[in-house]
Length: 173
Length: 102
Image (cartoon, rainbow over all chains, first blue to last red; front, side, top):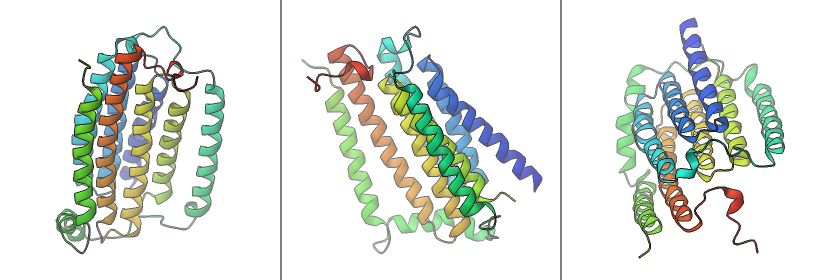
């Protein structure tokens, strides 16, 4: 059981350290690479939470698609690659204060509510139930009693985003 | 033996890293990247609560799947806007995009 905690600490360290580089690195290309590492750490946390399906989806959608899209955008706007400009605006101290204090408050609430007694370990769910999650999910996504309407709305949203981004980014004649 | 609170603390830290990035960065693309960090933190929270509270029903997984869909749409439209703004203003620094201000 200590191995699981050790793996958790490694993954959390990877996630948070590379997340720190995402928001602080002057060179945006390096920040984008650090962001891919953050996504990888989050995928590892999904595996630790017994959700291999979501980990695979994270790899495909975030690392495979969104990161590549962002790197394309960085390379198409050349001034972004310049590292001599200041990376932060004039209010960055205030932003740091706000995030540190709100984060500390949130951690305090989490420790108060969940730290001592609630949900100290995962419930003993059988492997059959966990492996059946993807099957049930697939059935739910197309069943009229459960999630078919959000599923269809999501596909319409994707179509709208597809057409919209082409129209917005098209060069003017 | 990992308590639920550990996941929640990691997700909170990642979320507020993203908040700091959105508030302090000057480049629009860097702000979009910080938004992606915040979305990932929320997803960690959802999956952790799903696993610890109701692993019998796949509702948490489905929710994360929909968040992923919306995040992909948001990234595509946001980067298209960035490229369009760069074409017309030759800059993506958020402070210089002030034509609605005057």
